[in-house]
Structures are given as structure tokens and as C-alpha cells.
Length: 574
Image 1 (cartoon, rainbow, N blue to C red):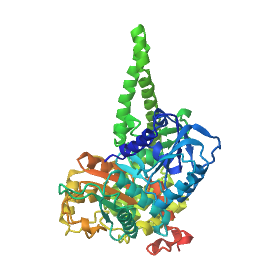
Image 2: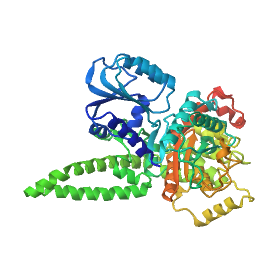
Image 3: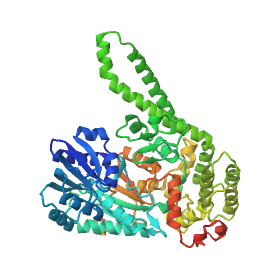
Image 4: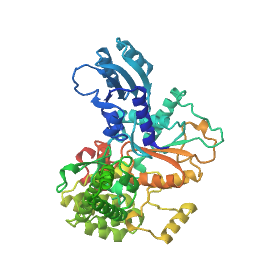
């Protein structure tokens, strides 16, 4: 179950089916991102694709009849109309049309009527309607999917299409379960079920001949775990996203001083950069040591290059030069990123801030933590954004504590000019009244399994104070693979597939409201233990994008659960 391999196979198929000869590829905004995250431009050039054009932007009317045209677009109404216009007045010798998802027959018929010159050679559906970030992680690039705490209709449809494309590309016809109590999760699960039922012939994959349990699609809601996206991260990929932001596998450093102009935009793809692929889940300390080793190896090779004395040496130099050049680029790129991460961590006092974030997330020590938060958020070295996250974590953990003192903390935030309205918005979005399950391990003695797990955790201690927290998702997945009863918490939509008591072999998890790289790390660790899990989300969040989503989702609704913080609420919410 490797998403990047799946997308690559689809692209290979497109390029191969159009045969030899020079080609142009016509894309839309989303399929441009889908292709660029799986293939580099040089990879496409090797497949004789020499031009890239957008169907939905201004193009020249020049006819290029010596070129074949591969069209790879989403089957939206706008795209169908643009393609119909193109076929009425074709610029290329032949068209090979591929849609990234299921297309209605009426649209195919309409396109056929527009193709009067009979220049279309192929029309197919290739289910590549999602952005593959890692082999086990996909995103739909929707930073906001809710308004007034309900689905945005376009985001709901796009989520359904993205997930059905993932299921079709992995050839899975799953049992669909959703988070009980989450209307958003129930609505999406129902829509996916209806789509699968409607196109049942497409989903007619191998039935479970060997008696193994069917695959499982689990639809979760970000509002059950607002803590994970708020925490500062210390593994390489997650840390880069938190401090520098990764967008479509690219990091934009154009606004950073002291960055060489060749490194203003960097591509971070585990598939195209071996060092990054190997180290994306390594923690900050390990990365420093690894980059030092890489640096030493590079210096040794650089010294070898200087000793060109004989013809044989020259030959070796020419043969090894491309690899040497590539290695030089890799070393410089990652040194540049590590330098930025190191500078930001020291400047923002992140070691101290992060240690306290982890303590709040994992331990209930109210009075001691309150004093430490007051001290840190008043410290000018701590940015107002980091201070706000500490207050938000405190407000979530101690929302119902007898001595909860969120108001005095918000007063400090306000005096520093911070956006105090974020905290009440977060409580409305994901406070105690919303969350299902046991986010902060407020365990009742009756739950013997969890109590034992917590005791063992406490006795073992932690390997690292910066990585004590484990996301709620990890516990959920472990429960599923241990065969625990899922029904009251995760009811199934298509219950006729459910009589299996054995745990599923394959699992696709989708988080409405966005996944995080910390959860991707948890999935990666479980996959290394032999499980098969794919994680996806409406987007991939860092703390700032998550806060923005919370503010958008709660904008304009009346706050009912934060009366004690009313003077810090936005006027729209009172």
C-alpha cells in the first residue's frame, strides 16, 4: 500500500499509452500539484513530455500539429467545458484524455459530440485524485473545510471524491466506520458509501476468499484531538512544517535573510531526495549527527576529486561528477534547512516552551504548570504565537478544573497584543462538550486496560521530554489491531460486511479537519511493525494553519461554552 508508487504507475501509463513522439500535457490547478509531487520535471522529460500547460489559464492559439496531447484533469463542470472548447478547435494532432476520478456518462457523451475532427484517441479514468505526501500519507489541500462548524458543501464533495480515488487506486472495498457523535464524519461516511454503492462494478475487487477480514475505512474528526496540531514537533519533516511550512513538498525560504539565492525554494520529497527519505522521521538531535557524517563523506569525496593525475583518474572524475554534484546540492540544501531550524529554535526559546507543552499534554499538575506558563508567556523571548499555544493547551486540559485560571492568562496575552479570541474559539471547536474519548487520560479506575497502560508508561519514564506525547490516533489504531470492540464508538455504515471479529489487514484513516506529521510518524511506526495503514486528511496542519482553521470554522457562531471568557471573544461570537 504505497500511494506514491500508485500515482507513478498512473503517470507512466499515461505517457506509455500515447506512444513514442513529442508530447504536451494539459493539466488543471490540482492535477499540476498531483503530478509534481510524484514526478520531477526531468522525469517527465525522459518520457518525452516537453511542454506543460494549464487548461484553465490563458494559452496561445498556436496550432502545434506535430505534438500529441495528454490531458490529465479533474472531472469538474468547469474542466469539462474548457476541454469541450479545446476539442471543438483542436491545436494538437491527437488527444489522450485521462480523468482523475469517476466521470458521469453524460459528460463523456457531450465531449464526444464536441470532437468533430475525431482527434481523441483515448478516454480513461485514472484514480489519482489526491496529493501523495509520503508513501503512507495523502492530503486534499483544503486548509478550511468547515463554516459555522458544518461542512462546506464543496469540501464535503471533494473529500468524498478524494477518498474514493484512494480506495480505487489501492483496490479496496472497505467496511466504513465513522466517529460516533461527529455529524461531519457520519455525513462523509454516508456519502462515500452511496458512491461505492452507485459504482459497485468499479469496487468489485477480490472478495475475502481466504476468510480474512475486509479492509476498513475509518473517518475521524480533528475535533477529538486538538492537542496534536498545537504541539511543537522535533522530528525532521514535522519540524520543518511547523517552523518553515511545507506546501506541496516545497519549502519557501524567500523571506528568510542569509539564505543563498539558489535555496530560496527547496523541494523536499522523500522519493526524489534519498537523504530526506531516510531521515524525515529522525529527531532533531539525530539529524544533526547524520548531517555531520554526510558532510564528512562529502569532504572526503571533494578531496578525491582534486587528485586528477592520470587519464584513468580523469575518466573516473567524469563518471562520478554527476553524483558528486548531486551530493553537493543535498548537503547544502539540508545544511541550509538545519541552520534555519536551529536559529529559530534558539531565538524563540523553543526547548523550554516545548518541554512545558509536552508536560501540559501528558501530566496533570495544575498549580505548578500554571506558574510556569505565567512566567513563560510574560517572557519577551517567547513569541506571542508560542505563548498563545501554551494558554490554549492549558485551557483544553483544565477546562473543567475547579481552579482553572484561563482568564488571567488571556489577560497577559491581551496585554502583549496577542489574539486572545483564539482560545475561546478553540474551546467551542474542540472543548470537553465536543470531544469523544479520553484525550488527556483522565482515566476512571473501571477501565483496567487503560489504567495498566498508563501505569506502565509512568514506570518506564520517557526516553525524551520533547516527545512524551503520543497522538490519540495511535491508541485508536492499536485498539483496532488488537481486535477490540469498535461498535459503540465507531459504528459501521455498511454493516452487512461487519460479522468479522478479526481485525482488518488493511486500513485507511481519514481525518476531517486535517492530519499532522506527528500522526504520520505514528502510522509509519505501526507500518514498520507489519501493519498496512494509509493516513489522509483534508490538509496537513501545523499549529498556525490549525488555529486559522479553528477561527474560520467558528466564525459567526454564538459561543455557548465559554461564558467565563466572554470579554476575550470576537464580537462576531457574542
